[in-house]
Image (cartoon, rainbow, N blue to C red; front, side):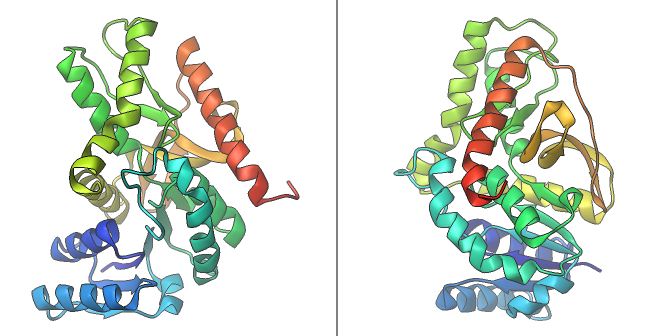
Length: 290
């Protein structure tokens, strides 16, 4: 049986609380939310559907759970152009929540944006094992990439690495046909704005993130050892240290089991390097001592 804590039970967190328990992935939930009325409503709503569900709202119990999904903070809305624009507000939330993760020995899945920065911050600020800190987003970016490639009748494995944001890196070199630079830039521009189409239409994304998060939880809970694109804290992989970025990683019950180091072409290398520089620029002020 699996215990799951969720920090932030708004749109995404609430959906994960429901799906994980309804699908039998978690039998014990610890739900943490700043807005008391929202937390109370989510707990009651869950119990109305599953009266026997074991739910705690004590933040101190986070450290005893098997997994923690961290979604706390402001979500993107039509007025927020980039995920990085959320850093100031969501860093303050992370600073408040970080003490609850002290002593946590489970698997952390970071969802709050900018996810790559928040994932790195929580690991370093709390002292969590980097290989047990997984940043979410690559699967979702990959699905959007897949839709665009299908529309253009381009075939091959669909992977997106780098930042979950403007500095994402769609991998073209593993496709079955060559894609010229001009077309690559067109596709990248589409990917950078793909989520905003949903946000403007319904106020925020939900089904896409929830589906891929549940898949990621299943992989960890079942110790499936599956290769997925997730944000990992890098220590020399791809020539990068000191930040968290999306890479192909084998994920299982122990978190990030290994990172595959693919040979990237020149365009991909340049964009991946730019992603690392952008993330380090955002991270540097968070740890002034280096």
